[in-house]
Amino acid sequence: MMSGIQGQILEVTVVGCQKLKDTEWFSRQDPYVVLEYSGTRHRTRTCTDGGKNAVFQEKFIYTMLEGLREIKVAVWNSNTLSTDDFIGNATIQLQKVLSQGYDDCTWTLQSKTGRFAGEVRLILHYAGAKNQNYGSAPSAPPYAPQVPQYSQPSPSPYSSAPAPYSGPSLYPQVQYSQPQSAYPPASAYPPQPSAYPPPSTSAYPPAPAGYPSAPSAYPPPPPSSTYPPSPYPPQPSPYYPQGPYQGQFPPPRY
Image (cartoon, rainbow, N blue to C red; front, side, top):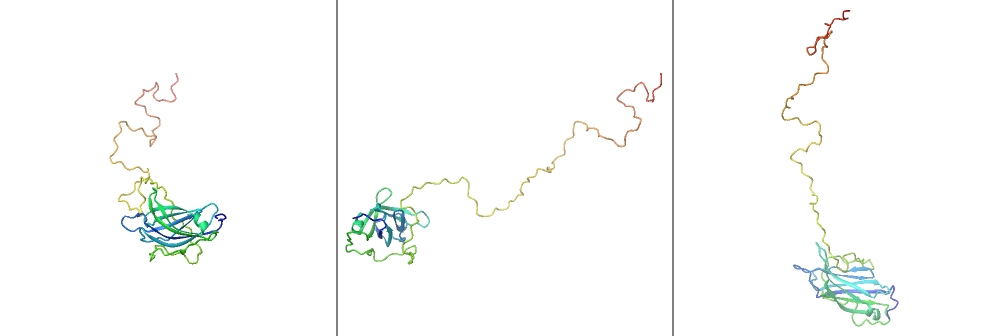
């Protein structure tokens, strides 16, 4: 009977992976597992140099949601200098663990193209099942004689539940190439002083001419005033004829 699972507790133990697709060319890959249920994600520690067979032995606790009877799992390869590599994923149905209270199986992982990408082993416990059938296997049996060193520290013993996973998405995202800028990035060094003086922004005074100005074809205009002033009476003009009088004033009477 699988009704009434709202608010019940589901324990998921990530035992390990085997036959994983190798995403490294020159070194051993570092796998880790991501679980997602009802929007809550958790990830295991990174199995450094785990290669194709990784061991985790980590337990996570989820609160069940009515109507949601599947959990998603994905395996990634951790990279230090680039984006993590997607290895494979799977969707695990919970009908067996909800009805019997226990499920210990190995699920097949698929790559982006749907090909075989390895296997992941999980152990599921559900205490709210009516027909309890745990079998003879323990909760988290040893998967390998020795657990390799991990690149990340173990979770704090004071926390009752592991912290939610905030890494890459459970499924691979489509990568889009970003257009590169047409200009070079700004330099991190201060600008060097120039060997030439900066150009003057002022237009006044003008720069002196390199050659003397050419003489004008026309005589210069007469001055507006002369000093000393002309004598009185005015002298006869050489340009105009004299009148009938020779400058006598008053003129003689007829």
